[in-house]
Image 1 (tube, rainbow, N blue to C red):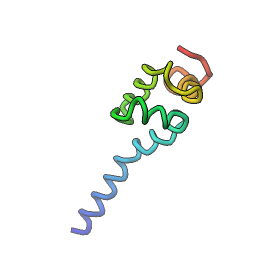
Image 2: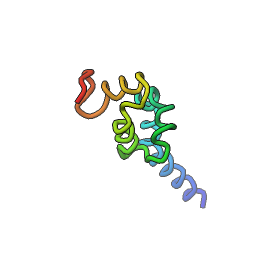
Image 3: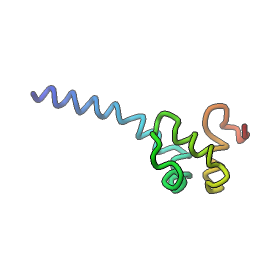
Image 4: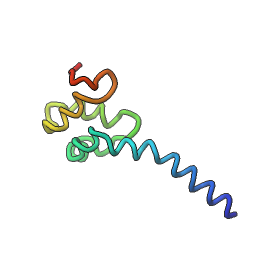
Length: 81
């Protein structure tokens, strides 16, 4: 029984890692209030939050737009799409 519990804890910790990582990057940090305001029902880790922020780009804070512009696929050089 104890081994099963330990295994379940390890599996749960591994499964939570991507969600934790998602919540600590520049977009999560700079867009926290905007995520709460515009994207609270979206799933982290599947690109839904970022897509929501991009859809609401004109409404989000300047710091959030900066984070969106400088991170993510095809970015990282401060270039907008």
